[in-house]
Image (cartoon, rainbow, N blue to C red; front, side, top):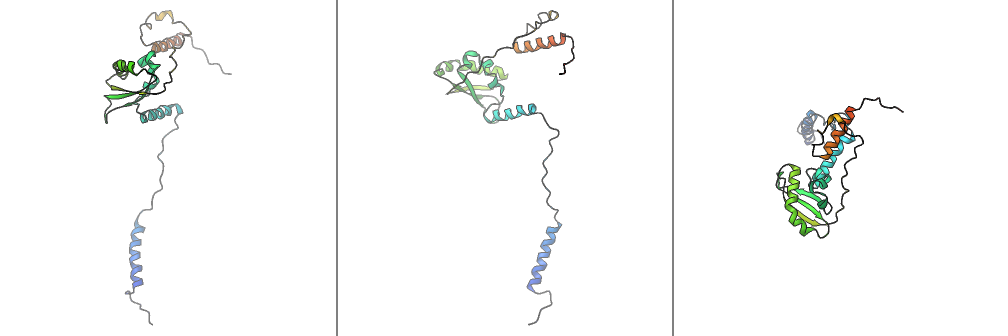
Length: 194
């Protein structure tokens, strides 16, 4: 048996093909390691909470979480005791003409069918446009929220402000402005360090 020294052997041909393929792999750049994009400086939790809440409310059909939190202000005490908003569903791709789904306690459905146009008008007034076109009701357990109590004013309004703040219709805004005016009227004091 004699060894062939020519380039015609099958082993050498396979080796030559492997080098040609391997050469193409060697020419490719090595795979880069994944680096997480940096988010900048650390953020306070209070900045993140509204985003987290907004995501959760959108998942359940609420575009604005304030509809749930301010339901008593929107529809009034009488209706807020027996109803609770469950979700708002809009037609695909629209933010108007939606359906408000309400959870109703007890046998209040017949009465609420008659006041449904008033509920629609109140919610649309809150949104500022015709966001709701229909109300859908389901029976369930409603836990009435505590009535909203305006915070007590500790200091009287300074006399130099006169009656200018008393003309403001929103009691919450009026209270905030009265407190701000009282704070500005007070002489500046140094904070106490204990």
